[in-house]
Image (cartoon, rainbow, N blue to C red):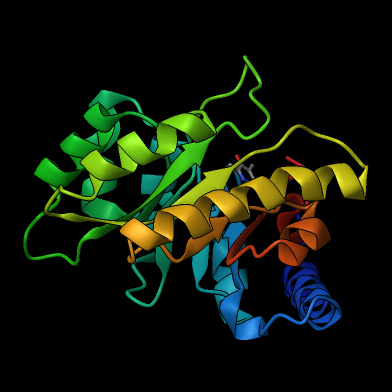
Length: 230
Ligand SMILES: *Cc1c(COP(=O)(O)O)cnc(C)c1O
């Protein structure tokens, strides 16, 4: 069922209120937390509704779906984040149309993005995907591999290493959610000593927003709670 304008705007307001409330609860400055509205599989009209409500950062997982929307919307104020797995043959589209790519777990993909990023554009912002719960079915590198990948990525000219992202194991248990996120925070703190451009923790979805904010998330990726079920 299609949502109305009214409900996208309302849902955004509710999420922004939640973010503010959780920031207060955990002594965070709300200006440090960016809401990424995950619009994957949703039509351009819903993105337009979100823009009308003041939302400008959008997350997409599927390149064809994303390009259709980016072309339809053509709003230079929008910031597009690719948050899906990246196949080698899709890197040129990501390099051309996105400001961020969150799921880098191979140097090969980072290299292609750097090579294909036009020198006339600002560097592409990159996060390394960490398989924080060592789930054999999930993408991402292990904590122990992060330093080696960061070292290689940091040398590439047309991308900026901004931070880390994760998709933790699904659980309703707030303490368990926090244990995964706190490992992300420690890893970022450790890497920041060597790589000062790393200022981003991309973590927290509709079901674990509070725990992510408690542990230092700077980009939260929310889909269902804004645009409805997929
Ligand atoms: C789909 C998706 C989200 C949004 O998830 P919701 O549960 O709909 O909020 C966030 N991050 C990634 C990587 C996703 O693929």
